[in-house]
Image 1 (cartoon, rainbow, N blue to C red):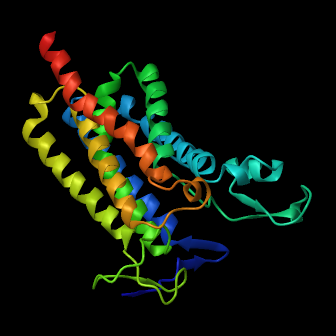
Image 2 (cartoon, helix red, strand yellow; image 1 turned 180 degrees about the vertical axis):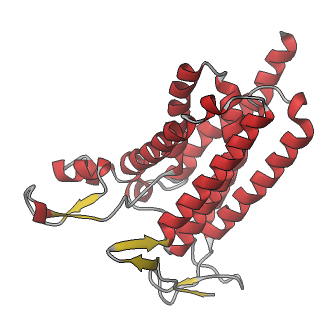
Image 3 (cartoon, one colour; image 1 turned 90 degrees about the vertical axis):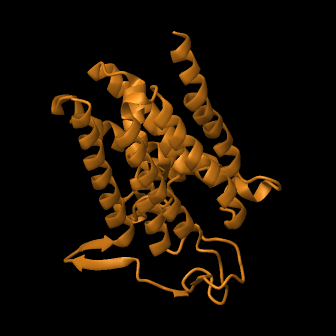
Length: 279
């Protein structure tokens, strides 16, 4: 497959609509709809549901951005005050100083799923404190909706020809013309996107059939275990990212960060269930 799509979908006057941003919005909108449907299935009011989106958005985007900067490129972002500002603002400094002509708006170049997950967990704790909902009930519902957004994010990465796989000779290999011309690589983004959409299908079937038989935390644990176990193994097929990955020889940063999430997921699936039975 010769893969060379234009990352820009179309222009609306001065406004540029990119595949990346559009797919992010579609994924978040569908997850919003799935979450609302689950709230209604549980008999929870719209008043409790409405603040959730704002908390989740801030947690996911803020956590994903900081996660990328601190986990993958700390030497860039923490060694210069201009670069430090770029962590928080969607800009890039192109000239010395702080004047209007010293920077340009480029959007956020780099978001890490591990940071996004951690940011979401913290944001949900604040949301539950405000709404008085049980934390594990909320994260169980979030877990069902999360794979939709994750799948669309990886599709967005595919449209940007980023986070590519290793060189391979498999017959379905992609030549990412803009990024790695002349090389045929695993479409790792496509593998992940398909895995996440399959996860959503499995989870939706589980809650429709066994909703009343599951202990609190099971769906959250199942989602964490599935996503980060898959993420751990798919990293063997992916090209290492810049930064700390270059200094790791056995496991890369994505794999090391996946291990604690897998352990937390297994604990929520099995240990929490035993505690409920004991009670």
